[in-house]
Image 1 (cartoon, helix red, strand yellow):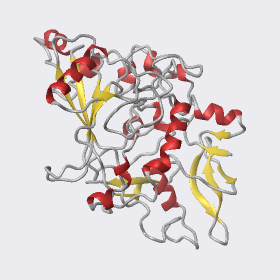
Image 2 (cartoon, helix red, strand yellow; image 1 turned 90 degrees about the horizontal axis):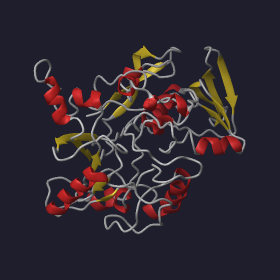
Image 3 (cartoon, helix red, strand yellow; image 1 turned 90 degrees about the vertical axis):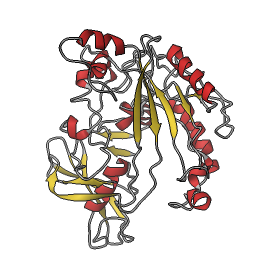
Image 4 (cartoon, helix red, strand yellow; image 1 turned 180 degrees about the vertical axis):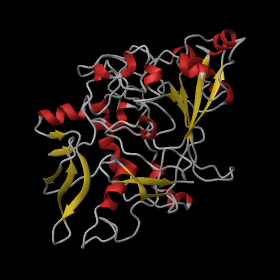
Length: 396
């Protein structure tokens, strides 16, 4: 097995989480948005006509370096939205088909959590107990109880105890930019080392430009540019693409041939259509009685699935979940989070002190249904550093 990875292999010791300027680095070369990050291995995305900006990372481990490791499972209903609610399409697989693989992934990545959640089907025990709620989590849990809403400690791939040679979380609150302790599970510290041990080869700084095909129209390998910009070819008996929801259709559309004049696998004309993102909105609140709300895993405290399923009393189908996040660091607090920035000039220190360590976040995780007008196309002007057409995302 050979993997062509357009990014680099980053030593966890180089993550910015131990740097005193970690928040500044997180807004520049470690930004979640490739357009703001602009590293050599990134490609630009034209999102001028999109309501949502892409958050992704180019490196071995991909976006799991940036994620908060919050890992709730899909519900059985998510696979049958057409049958149940008359929208989108049913999946060709069911929750039960994936259940065993969910379990395998939980063991490989290391899942912290606790059984008994009434909102989801019964499942196997997690290999680690849940991350402690903390005072802020307990405060929010009590609020959900008063409302009579469901809540449960979040499943997450953050070590609550040492696991498979990786340290337990030290609650530094900086997990959005990698984890130097490897307490946050990401594929560069679990799947890939094991795959390489078993013989897989990872070619880094390899930007694929085209999936090549033979006379029969079947894939034969991939053309790519190496770090120096040299054009190369990797032959293959089988090709698996894993370039995320933007990069994969981009590459398929670039892979035109006599057998596939509109791009590979595009006889239906649907490649690049029905783009789905992970809509995420936040509300920040201030709780004066709490302190050090920045401490602990950022997005792995508790979640509420009170409004997850379709409710005929509402004027829409499907639903959403709530996730509690921790408070922000000093820079994030000063810039306001979901609020206005702190007062500048007179009153600055007082305003900052009233917020820092007292802010908590409630995030709404929405469901993005497939719609043909949400697309990925090839931009006719914007290119990456190798001259390949950049993707253009259009979502509303």
